[in-house]
Length: 154
Image (cartoon, rainbow, N blue to C red):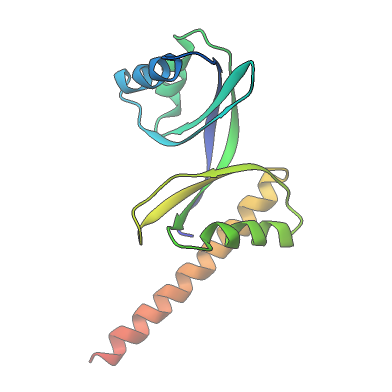
């Protein structure tokens, strides 16, 4: 884990028919909004498109112009290494500390690179403190290891 931050997520309710997702993503592209993370879940009646973007204000304006039912909420975004077990580490940390994960999704990333996990949790403040402390702890461990390597090369 490298960074933890609160982000705005938009949930857009889409009719299940061809071209609707294309309409939404084109509106965001035309507004120069980059999608940082996204998931689409369907039911018989409609789909729910959840989007986190790099620019929530522009995203909101672009989405509102489509006149589709939409809500917004705050989610926790965590930059993680793209390796087996990274998501399990976060889920275990939250579960061990009695924080329920209402839902989660992750982005794809380059092998060996970074990925973003998006989490909607029951106790957002507790989760932010816990995850931020874990990131800081890991960062200090990496810094100490880097310093040890640098001293050994002298």
